Length: 410
Image (cartoon, helix red, strand yellow):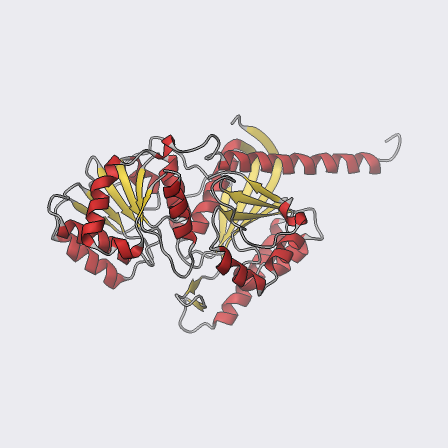
């Protein structure tokens, strides 16, 4: 896209970030694409990620860190600090978000995935924006969850009605033929008209210098589990396959993720040290560096990993999480159906011989590019076009109002 100017355009983004890295990384990719394509735009990301500061941000993109909370495996939330009550944390988050929104006074407010924010913390801010000229946008993943689980979760909060009431538009970060994230829900005609499929969010595919601090093989299979909070199983399944099959000796690079427990890291490192050609890395914020030289990937099929596989045209074997959400399973299953990747269920991957066979077959898979449809990866370009439309529309309205209010003969 040709670089254009959208002078004095302010965009506020919200990423609740209670588990993993997906929300922040998605917001960051969108923000970077916008500032690369438009001069004069300033973007501020509100993030609850514990490690937001570990990522680099381009000029004109900054973030405000709100207190972190953690999502427990039972679906409940808790504070990071032992001596701070979760209700106090939630109240602080709500107030910081609202005050930041008031001070920044954005032209566009983009919310990632959680329509009302964590525990409804965005509702006062969204209510405030209804009285301003700020355009409110909800960004939805290609897959949210199974229709049954999402319907049950959202029905308790009247979520569809609130989305229609508070949001001007909803962008779906995937192509329409891949999946409908609101499948099975009773979507009103009014809300249906606000939905726009923009396509998958493509990641940059450019020459990136090597990362210092570790030595990598020239070619390897990359094993990653995103943030790593629940990544121990897939790592152990790959190591078990290597232990089971001595012929499976292709170099492997494992990225544990910043949220993996220390005892799990230690256990994996010890086990990997007994095998040849296995490199273990704790965390790398620039996954693009490691993705480019990989001949294939083994992962859980989170949204960002999936987009990276498609963007870098890498063969992939996915072992999706199935609890507490079915999002990854649905995405991996659909991707397998249309020839973008291969998949094992967690139960299948737990059998060393089955995982070993899948790893042997990985280099023989088709490249994703052979099955992608035209414009499937146009998400970032389409988001930029939508931002430009909103910005130019607001300026046109402002100019018209100024002309009407300008005294005759002035």
